[in-house]
Length: 81
Image (cartoon, rainbow, N blue to C red; front, side, top):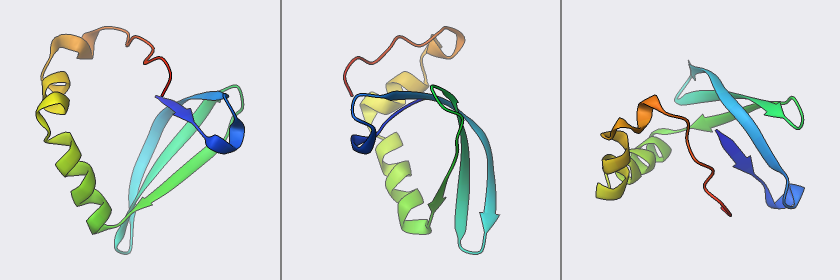
Protein backbone atom coordinates (compact mmCIF):
# COMPACT_ATOMS: atom_id res chain seq x y z
CA UNK A 1 0.00 0.00 0.00
CA UNK A 2 1.27 3.46 -0.83
CA UNK A 3 0.36 6.81 0.76
CA UNK A 4 1.01 10.39 -0.32
CA UNK A 5 0.21 13.49 1.70
CA UNK A 6 0.15 17.12 0.65
CA UNK A 7 1.73 17.91 4.02
CA UNK A 8 4.77 15.73 3.21
CA UNK A 9 5.46 17.12 -0.26
CA UNK A 10 6.46 14.40 -2.72
CA UNK A 11 7.30 11.90 0.03
CA UNK A 12 5.75 8.51 -0.58
CA UNK A 13 4.99 6.19 2.35
CA UNK A 14 4.99 2.41 1.98
CA UNK A 15 2.58 0.74 4.39
CA UNK A 16 0.56 -2.37 5.19
CA UNK A 17 -2.84 -2.87 6.76
CA UNK A 18 -2.31 -4.34 10.21
CA UNK A 19 -5.87 -4.70 11.45
CA UNK A 20 -9.46 -3.57 11.67
CA UNK A 21 -11.58 -3.28 14.80
CA UNK A 22 -15.02 -2.02 15.67
CA UNK A 23 -15.34 0.85 18.12
CA UNK A 24 -18.90 2.02 18.68
CA UNK A 25 -20.41 2.98 15.32
CA UNK A 26 -17.03 3.05 13.57
CA UNK A 27 -14.70 0.55 11.97
CA UNK A 28 -11.10 1.47 12.75
CA UNK A 29 -8.62 0.60 9.98
CA UNK A 30 -5.09 0.25 11.34
CA UNK A 31 -2.17 0.84 8.99
CA UNK A 32 1.56 0.58 9.76
CA UNK A 33 3.90 2.60 7.58
CA UNK A 34 7.18 0.84 6.76
CA UNK A 35 9.26 3.38 4.81
CA UNK A 36 10.65 6.04 5.14
CA UNK A 37 9.24 6.33 8.67
CA UNK A 38 7.46 3.93 10.99
CA UNK A 39 4.07 5.31 12.00
CA UNK A 40 0.82 3.74 13.10
CA UNK A 41 -2.07 5.37 11.24
CA UNK A 42 -5.71 4.83 12.10
CA UNK A 43 -8.78 5.77 10.06
CA UNK A 44 -12.30 5.64 11.53
CA UNK A 45 -15.04 4.71 9.02
CA UNK A 46 -18.68 5.49 9.79
CA UNK A 47 -21.57 3.83 7.93
CA UNK A 48 -21.82 6.61 5.30
CA UNK A 49 -18.05 6.30 4.70
CA UNK A 50 -18.34 2.53 4.25
CA UNK A 51 -21.18 2.91 1.73
CA UNK A 52 -19.07 5.40 -0.22
CA UNK A 53 -16.15 2.94 -0.33
CA UNK A 54 -18.48 0.10 -1.41
CA UNK A 55 -19.99 2.26 -4.19
CA UNK A 56 -16.51 3.07 -5.52
CA UNK A 57 -15.46 -0.59 -5.34
CA UNK A 58 -18.53 -1.63 -7.36
CA UNK A 59 -17.55 0.53 -10.34
CA UNK A 60 -16.75 -1.58 -13.39
CA UNK A 61 -13.10 -0.46 -13.63
CA UNK A 62 -12.52 -1.34 -9.96
CA UNK A 63 -14.37 -4.67 -10.15
CA UNK A 64 -12.26 -5.54 -13.18
CA UNK A 65 -9.00 -5.29 -11.21
CA UNK A 66 -10.45 -7.12 -8.18
CA UNK A 67 -11.60 -10.03 -10.36
CA UNK A 68 -8.35 -10.27 -12.33
CA UNK A 69 -5.34 -12.49 -11.73
CA UNK A 70 -3.33 -9.53 -10.44
CA UNK A 71 -3.73 -10.84 -6.87
CA UNK A 72 -0.78 -13.13 -7.47
CA UNK A 73 1.86 -10.73 -8.73
CA UNK A 74 3.72 -7.69 -7.47
CA UNK A 75 1.84 -4.48 -8.20
CA UNK A 76 3.41 -1.95 -10.57
CA UNK A 77 3.97 1.53 -9.19
CA UNK A 78 0.99 3.76 -10.09
CA UNK A 79 3.18 6.71 -11.07
CA UNK A 80 2.12 10.16 -9.89
CA UNK A 81 -0.97 9.87 -7.68
